[in-house]
Image (cartoon, rainbow, N blue to C red; front, side, top):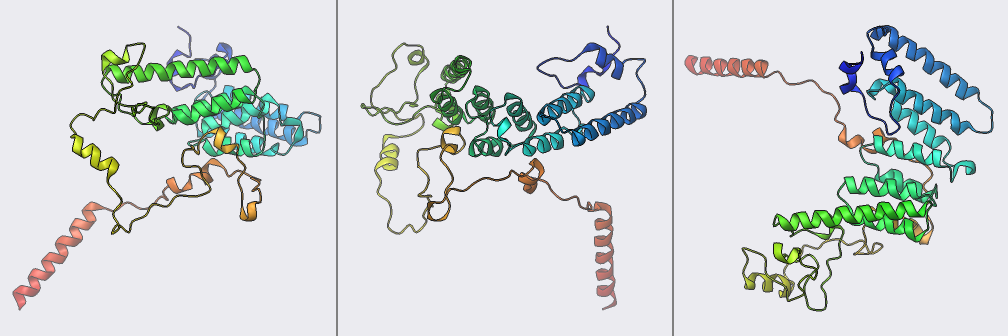
Length: 341
């Protein structure tokens, strides 16, 4: 058993792995104390930042890539003391208008690392799409599709894979393999839901077209376990869901709109009703402003600014004992006033 085994639960895994010698130096029995270690890291960080600031060579991005790698190796727990997100925010925005890195895979990896660290990465990929950054790389579409799949936006993820393939993003074969794996996961999920009798799902959940076929049966109509295992799916008329009557289905589909109902749902005419706004396919359409002018996305707010409505301002908690004492005192005073009267 190595001398850093007792601290491994605090370490965030890296795809490239971690060096055992570096972990032993930080968490081993002969490693310096926490205070001394933090002081040492602070001095190293200042040296790196000074070097980056004074650098005047041909590849400033390379220094930021090394800086991010140093943070990941020096702060295995990836806690707030690492300042990884602020560094990624600064590095990604510093070169957003630099033509040298428009198609640099290192720059794209920084953006994807930043997206993985944020609570909602949707705006990040939309920003990259608007700025035409690394749009010919398969990694862009793979990273976006993975984020959409994590959010259970399977239809958007499917459209993102298709857009990358249609654009012949490189390496194309790897993108196609990942898309095939995604389709396999979706097929397995549908079959698993069918086996459990949970096939009544929406197109937003599985990313499958729900339009009626020529026989009137929707693609996501409820089917039995036996039908799900067959090579050919039934295409008969629409079957009513369990627990509902035929009259209920008929009234819900053929009932005319009431003229006395004044409640109206707003529909944005600039958006296609059948499109999904979270995928790369819809983000490919330029944003338009007044008189059809194209809106340019010049900058992207930081993660804390984009989700600041979810951060409550700290306030003093109410003291329940104090409130009860004040209430009891008030009741006592009222009783005394009644007794005097």
